[in-house]
View 1 (tube, rainbow, N blue to C red):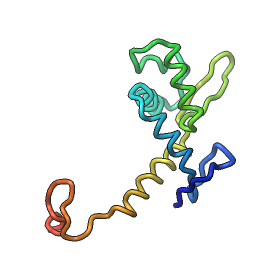
View 2: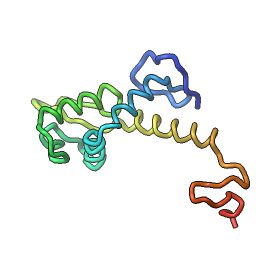
View 3: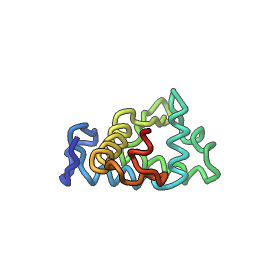
Length: 130
């Protein structure tokens, strides 16, 4: 996977190339605790949720939940579907995993601990393997 500094022409992410601006938008959207609560609530809702149902996850006004849903949707984390008079929100099962996987893969590929260097527990990596 490659992270580019060029914006992608579509909202759908591609596993082979992820533009840095899209990745920044996703992590910025996830940086708010209430938006994270909303994402976790929607991950637990197989059929998705409308604004009122989603509002149960947070102790904030419905209008603020609606604004958070909009931010999450614009960043590519959520999708929305109109069902009659209701709008149902779901976590985009493509974009979010690609963004998180890309970041994790990039960190792991460039930052693997070398033998003998201390890991996060203070043990050397050769000691941790024994």
